[in-house]
Image (cartoon, rainbow, N blue to C red; front, side, top):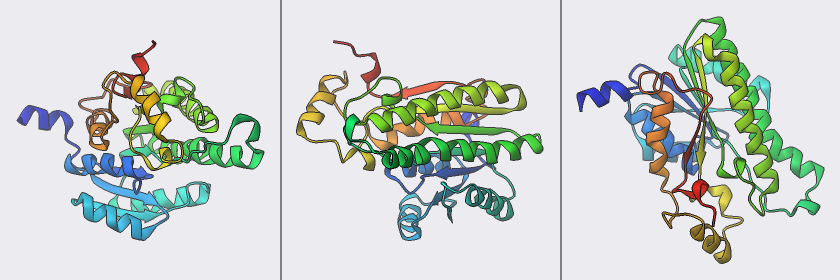
Length: 256
């Protein structure tokens, strides 16, 4: 056990989890905290954040930020540095979804999804990446992708397009920063009971998903924790960058 603790420990690390008040990212944040990290949940709803902090326990804090605004993201980093002295891990987990059919998607709706899922991810990577580069510091970025970013899914066209772009962005950043001690990876959940899925998960949709998932069940949010710790740890995951780590019960391996 001592060896495993050394391999995955995040003692002394500061992890910033954007979207950390959501269902999936709050469990990821809990795993980071239990591995020893000081964890900062980022969102706009302080009441929701307090509920998550109470559920998680450990060294967990909340910083409010509007991730769609660059100045707010810079302010987030500045506050983290002022309060905790550094930042080591960035999780980009904020996301919105929409079931609007392709021909009915308005420019405004599409832009809104792209801005939250893609542009805000880029902005956070730029702000934190610049900090690490200027300070010759190690950094690990975990961007939340989606199984729909690998294979298009019906009913979530805009979301799929935005997440496919996140996958590509992550690989580009990984290439750009690989020799400068910054790792960038994409954690790719399959079907989990996330808040943004509820709009499209009717009975027929659930049946379709189960028929395409060899494990024949949804994932539990806690089942993302191991992958999160692997990608966050410079010991366990120090040579992993530009990777898409799929956690999907076999969905992506299924054909017919």
